[in-house]
Picture 1 (cartoon, protein in one colour):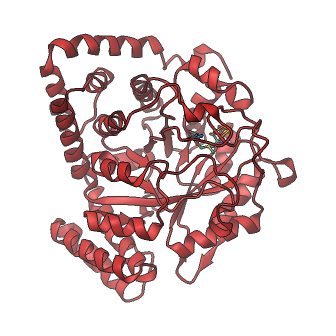
Picture 2 (cartoon, helix red, strand yellow):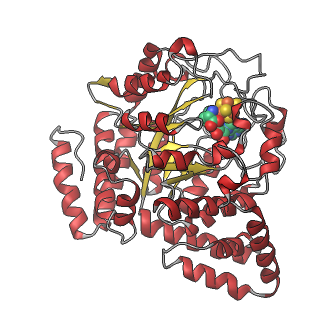
Picture 3 (cartoon, rainbow, N blue to C red):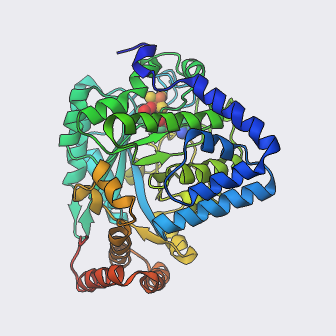
Length: 469
Ligand code: SAM
Ligand code: SF4
C-alpha cells in the first residue's frame, strides 16, 4: 500500500489555506476569536477553521481567555480525575533510523536489549508493587526472529497480564508499536490490548522524509494508514500523537484534525486519546539537541488548550518527558492522563537506569510523589480501567461521553480506585492528602454518583478489590 491516492483525506494545501485565512482574520477581527471560544463552550468540538483561529492567539489577553476556556471545558468533562499509567519498554532493538531517537539503528554506542519473558514479568511485578494498574507497552521496531518476530509482542502481552501479587495485577495494557498489517492487528486485539497508540511524528511529508532516512518507518503512507487497518481489524480504541519540534506545530495540529475527521467519516469514531510529546535530548541524536521547529512552553500550553477545545471528549496524555513544573501548569488546561515514575530503558524498573533510555526525562518523581502532589492540588488520581473491561470503547464510549453520562461512571470509579491505592500502597502522608481529596470529591458529586461511589467505597474499605461500574 503506498501512493498519494491512499491518503487523499490529508490534503496539506487545505491546512495551508485555513492557516492563511486565519492569519488574515486575526489582524482585523478579535470578534472571531471570541466567537470560537463561545462555540467551544458548547462542548461539541471545533472545525479546522476554528482551530486555525485559536492558533493565532498571541496577546496576553487572548492567551488568558483561551486558557480560561480550556480550564472550564476540562473541568466540566473530566472533573478532577487524572488517570495514571507507566510505560513498559520491553525492547530497544530497532531497524529504523529516526534521527531524533536514541534507539535508531546507527547508534552503536547503545547496548541493545529485548527483554525475555522473565524480564518482562520482573518489570511488571515491580510496577504492580508500586501500585500501577495500567501500563503502556513500548518497543523499537525490530522484533528479533530468535524471539518469534511479531509473536514476541503477543507473548509479552500475555506475560504482563500473567503477573499477579497479593495486591493485584495489571488491568489494562495499552501498546505503542510500529504499524502492523490487518492480521497482526487482529492478533493484537485478541491478545487483549487497551488502546493501540501510534504517533505520526510529523504530518509534513517533506520533514517526515528528512528525519526518517531509512528503515521501514520511511514509508509515510504505511504509518498514516495504520489506524485504518487497526479499525478494519476491530481495534476501535486508538491513540494519536505528534512529536512536537519537527515541524510547525500549527500545521501538525490541523493535520491531526484531518486525521480524526477521516476516521470519524469512515469508521464513525475518531481517536480515544492524543499524546503531545515534545522532542527531548536523546543519546546519539544531534537533531534532538536542536529540534528544527522548537515549541516554546507557551506554545506547548496553547497546543494543549486548543486540543482540549477542538476534541473535548478525547483524552489528552502528558508524559514524563516534561518537567514537573510544566506538567503542573498543563493538568488543568486539558490533560486527562499522565505517566508517572517512568523509565525508558528496557529493564529500568527492576534493574535501574543501567543504559541510556530513549530520551531524557523531565520528571523523575516516583508514582507515590506524583499521587501525593495531585491529591494536594485537588485532583483525584485514578487507576480506573472499567470502560475497556466492560467493552465501553469506540462508538460505545462516545455515546456515553457526549451526553455527559460517562461522569456517572468515571467519578465513582476514580475515587474507588484511588481508595484502593491509598490502602494498599500509599505512605501515611499521601494517605492523608488522598483521604481529604476523596472526601472533598464526594461532597461535589451529584447525588446519584455519590451514592454509587459510597456503595463501592464501603466494599473497598472492607477489603474487596477491583469494583467498578
Ligand atoms: N518504535 C515505535 C515507533 O516509533 O512507532 C514505537 C514507539 S517509540 C519507542 C515511542 C515514541 O517516542 C515515538 O513515536 C516518538 O514520537 C517518541 N520519541 C522518539 N524520540 C524521542 C525524543 N528524542 N524525545 C521525545 N520523544 C521521542
Ligand atoms: Fe525505532 Fe521508534 Fe526510535 Fe524510531 S522512534 S528509532 S522506530 S524506537
